[in-house]
Length: 148
Image (cartoon, rainbow, N blue to C red; front, side, top):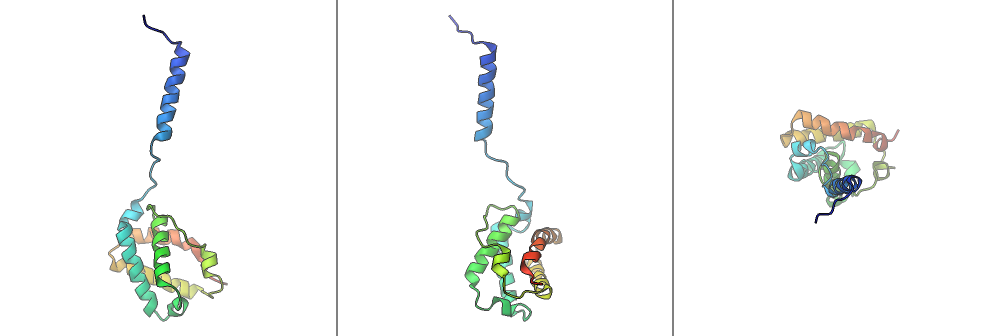
């Protein structure tokens, strides 16, 4: 002999099941197209390595990087670019304001770093579209980096 359940209970059970499945489903991934266009983690690492070589020899920037731990700077730049571009990384560094406070960075030095970053991306064969997307994400940080 079969048991019949009130329609209201069946509807409630079905709704609970659907909600449970939705809550257990993996969250939708953020758009990682820029991360992929930059070459994912290996590409971003190559861009950062190339950039750091440039900052060591660029007379406009060299004074700002003297005494800075390249190992830590490399790690934080990779995290930052990876995170900003939609990759799986989490940036664990200080804020841009904290990191650059008191360094006396002016607009010319900021522009020099942007030029060196663009050159590094060119050498790593990053498309202009991807370069512009990354630079657009980095540009607002200028307010916390440049000292008036």
